[in-house]
Structure formats: C-alpha cells, structure tokens
Amino acid sequence: MANTASGQYLDKMEKELGAVQCVGDVRRWERRYEYHRWRTGTVYHLDTAVIDFQLREAGKFGFRSGRKFVDTIEPEIDDRPTRSHSATTICCATN
Image (cartoon, rainbow, N blue to C red; front, side):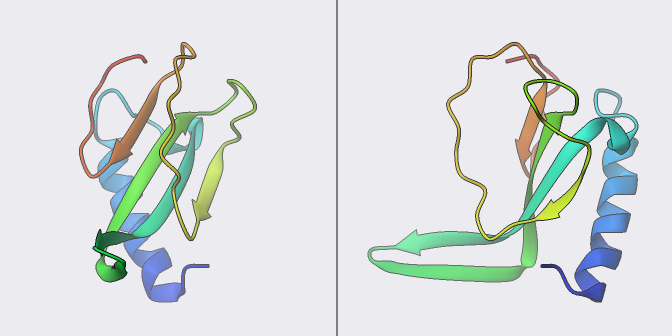
C-alpha cells in the first residue's frame, strides 16, 4: 500500500491526469499504480521514484472506480471495447 508521501504524489498525478482531455474526471476510472520495476537477466530492480499506472474505464466489465496501489500491474491482452490507458504515456484511443 502507498505511504502518505506516495498518496500525496498520487493526488498530484491524478490532478494532472484529469487535465488530459480523454481522461477527464479521474473518478470515472479504475486507477492502478505500481512502483516502476524492470529486469536485468534474473535480477529485478525497483525504482520508487517512478510510478507506473493503468487506467480502466469504470462501470465496464466489472472495473470499479477507485485508486489501488498494487505490487504488480500485470500486462493484459484485452480486445474488449473499453477505454484504458497504461504506463507513463497516455494514448487517447479505444482498444
């Protein structure tokens, strides 16, 4: 779970996300966050200075509005017709 400092950072991040036209009100999204991680060979690295995110349109396919700080955002192959945004880049498109 995110600590208070992370929670304050997420508040700021969500304010900025809300300013993106295709995102709008963040309460319309299931918002998942994780610390950035990568792998070198068999060694995993964690960067707590970078937060990756995934947004999934709430009210569709069981996605519920709210903020979740998770250990890992699992990659998904999903062709359902819903809006979602991932990582640190926003692409305003429907799957």
